[in-house]
Length: 122
Figure 1 (tube, helix red, strand yellow):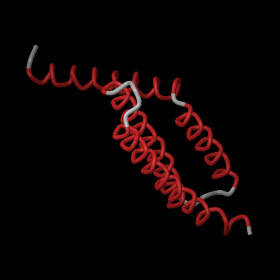
Figure 2 (cartoon, helix red, strand yellow):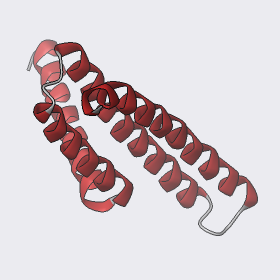
Figure 3 (tube, rainbow, N blue to C red):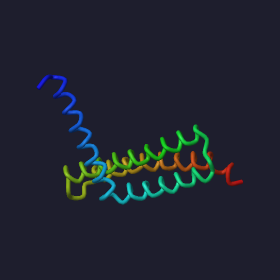
Figure 4 (cartoon, rainbow, N blue to C red):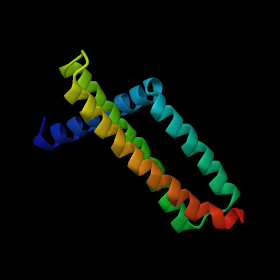
């Protein structure tokens, strides 16, 4: 096996692991499930309101980012629980900060949604 073949084979394996992780998030994380449903609803609404190409790019980017940030938040919580399964003040703070980052972007996503959809509704 050449060096190039092993590089390609390792990338394919990495993509497989990434799909496994994404499926785990979708099956097991309620926050991801909620964001996915909201993303599907907004996609349907986007077709109804005939979003422009730019609006679609922004909407898809925002949906992808919020799901990705929720996934990172889930990882931080898993690592924190693994390191210190019992309650610990510092672990609680770490989890709160991580959840706060999700809240900040979720608020941004809502504002972006208003900017895109309010002119179309009114």
